[in-house]
Image 1 (cartoon, one colour):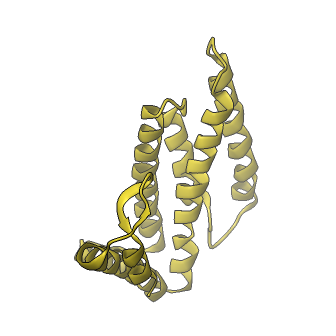
Image 2: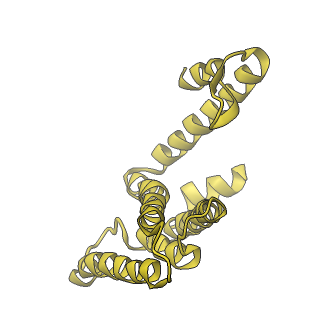
Length: 172
């Protein structure tokens, strides 16, 4: 994974980097929406994942043409119209607003935020590598310190094994 990450960050052309980001966004969204469906939310995981993958494919172009700029509002309106239709075409409308909210949250949380790696890569590949090293280093530090000396749970109902001590280590 380290060699693959190195190749993607430092050797792939920007369109290849964008493609890898799109695949990772798709996998993340599909997992997020699968979990949401298990909790009883109607999210239309295939359609919503497909629309969410468009974010890194369309966003942060080096050369914005009028056609690309026009695609943003088109796809946004198209997504919400189709998704509103999906939510309200069912016989029961309970939970429709909740399903739409979870779907939009997934696109914002995963597609939009993860897509910020594209302009970061345009500024410099070392910035992407630094971001990943800091993030993974924090995760590893939190795990090691939390496993070794963690006593106080952080938020047990959300993640029972995360500790205050591990969180402090991650921040440090």
